[in-house]
Amino acid sequence: MPTITVKNVPPDLYECLKRSAEANRRSINSEVIVCIERVVRSRKRHPEAILAGARRLREKTTGYPIDDDEFTDAKAVGRL
Image 1 (cartoon, helix red, strand yellow):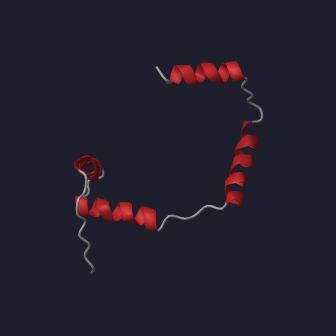
Image 2 (cartoon, rainbow, N blue to C red):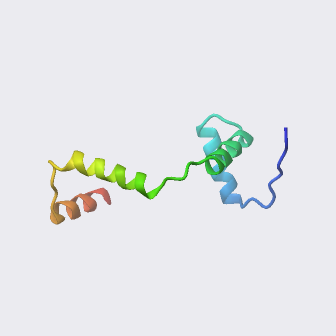
Image 3 (tube, rainbow, N blue to C red):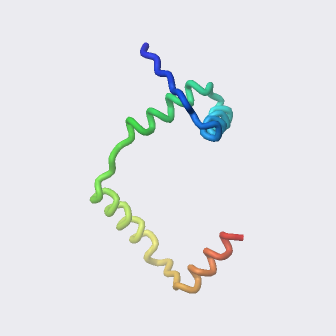
């Protein structure tokens, strides 16, 4: 199996990677492999698919209108 050496990893990035590995109960090496897989094997979404998803969501929420004031209030509450 091929081996990759990564040099000059910034300390803050390494700490984030270490915490993520611990949270996922993986070694740092396994966490790096998962991160690489997510980027390299990620599916590219076509604009048509994104629009279709937005249209489906809009159809589901049609019966729940919200005005600008309600939206602004909800955002403000979320920032507390």
